[in-house]
Every structure is written in C-alpha cells, then in structure tokens.
Length: 284
Ligand SMILES: Cc1cc2nc3c(=O)[nH]c(=O)nc-3n(C[C@H](O)[C@H](O)[C@H](O)COP(=O)(O)OP(=O)(O)OC[C@H]3O[C@@H](n4cnc5c(N)ncnc54)[C@H](O)[C@@H]3O)c2cc1C
Image (cartoon, rainbow, N blue to C red; front, side):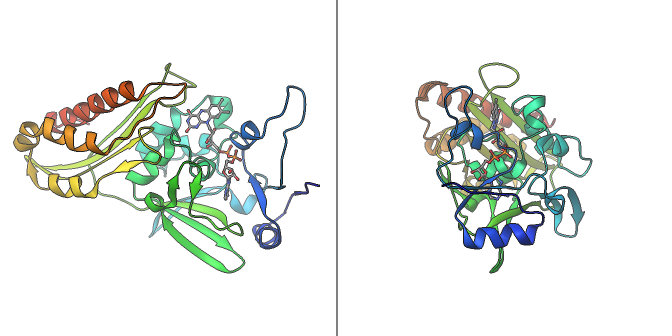
C-alpha cells in the first residue's frame, strides 16, 4: 500500500523522510507526468508520497550576505517576478513551459528532476548556485555543478529535503540566455546555453559558458574559462573558431524524439559563435 503524507512543518517533513522512502511532490509538474496512468485515472505511485507545496516555511525568496536564497517550494512564477533574482535566471524561467505550469512548477523541482533538458539547471550551474539539503542528521551544501550527476541522478540521500538554492552575488557585466525549442513558447529545449562575462576596457576579464541538452548533464569547462580569462577582445575574436572547436569536443548530443545529435551539435556551435560575437561586440 502507498501512504500519503501531508506534513505541516519542515521539521515534520524531515521526520517523515527519516522513516519513509518517499516521493517528494512539490508542483507535481514532472512527477505527475512520470507517474501518469491511463486517462481519467489517478497517477500510479509505487512508493509513499509526501506533499510539500503547502508548507509556508519552505516558500519565499530572501537575500543575505551569502546571496539570494530561493526556498524549495517557491514557484517559477515567483522567481520570474522577484526583484532579488538575477536577470539571467529570470530570462530562463520566463521561457520555461507556459504561464500555467510556472504557477505550480518550482525551481528546486527543476534541478531535483535532473532532466538533461532542465532549463534552469544550466543557469544554476553558471551562477555557481549552491543546493542546501536538510535532514534530521543536519545540513549539507552541494554546488549545483556537482549536484546533478546524470540523467535523473542527483547527490541527494533519501532522507534529505532540498530546502534552498542559493545564488551568490557574482561580478559580471554581460550575459546571454539562448534556448532553442520547437516553438517560441511552451517548448522543451533542444539546446540551451547560458553565458556570463566581464569586460574591462579592451579585455575579457572573465567569462563562463554552460550548455544544456547536449549531454547527460550541463557542460561547463573551467579549463577553457581560465584560458579565456584576461585575453584581449582582439584575441578572443581571432580565436573564435578555436574556442568553438574546444567546446564542441565536450558536447555529447543524442538523437531523440525532439532532435538529432547532428542538429544539436550544429546549433550549439552556432550559439557559442553568437556568444563570442556578443563579447567582442561589447554588448549584452
Ligand atoms: C507541459 C510541461 C511543459 C514543461 N516545460 C518545461 C520547460 O520548458 N523547461 C523545463 O526545464 N521543464 C519543463 N517542464 C518540467 C517541469 O515543469 C519542471 O521541471 C519543474 O520545475 C518541476 O518542478 P515541480 O515543483 O513541478 O516538481 P515535481 O514534479 O513536484 O518534482 C520533480 C522532482 O523533484 C523532486 N523534488 C521536488 N521538490 C523537492 C525537494 N524540496 N527536495 C527533494 N526533491 C524534490 C521530486 O521528488 C521529483 O523527483 C515542463 C512540464 C510540463 C508538464
């Protein structure tokens, strides 16, 4: 038999997780699809379910010296309209699914689902976000980059609840979000790219690029970022195709119902070119 739990507080939720291996249901926009049954029937859950979206303690966005904290059942709609949230994240959220879905879907649910097509995961990684996990045993912090380990694989123990995603304040003066789907809205990504950079005078002080939907997890290369840091804009321009080729070596796209591997690789390379053009053009 499958039990359902509706805890009133975070402490109660952690207590339940310490005793039961549960599905945690936030907005349910992924979980209800994964567990769907025949039309007109209730979803098929094969283990206990714990509902969390009503827990007030787990709602909201706040800022302190560590950065901007998005609590676990904060919806995409709240993220999109918060004055605290970095604009790059808002851009990604504004193109995720539809308005209706964004009223239910949570930012935490997107990374916990760990789909290669999860839009905001790419932004979590580029913005050096940190995932806060809590259990009756204590608190743990994991970098978003390490948290997603593969398709639907995350660094979470079964007794842990993700309680926040924390975005530290970063110093950059240019950014790019680019999502390619089958249509303009309500479309799952075929390729998405997030980029940030800082230009000082005629130099690229630093930059970062993360690609999604072209591997089992987001692609980020700290080696390439280090190679580019401090380069003159002139040299960035001259090295454009070298940079594109270096990133291409990391891309491992697949054929699926949404796209072919070849299409994904070609599009990803074009977006990297666009990112470099934006940097050397000096506009954001
Ligand atoms: C029509 C449609 C369109 C969509 N379009 C997009 C799109 O364009 N881009 C995109 O990226 N996604 C899209 N999605 C997927 C989905 O909306 C997102 O992944 C959403 O952010 C999931 O959040 P949720 O709160 O609904 O998660 P849920 O379905 O409640 O949960 C998802 C997973 O996260 C886990 N989880 C949730 N909260 C916690 C927590 N606090 N601690 C630990 N684990 C937790 C759950 O156990 C589950 O494994 C779409 C979905 C639908 C139905």
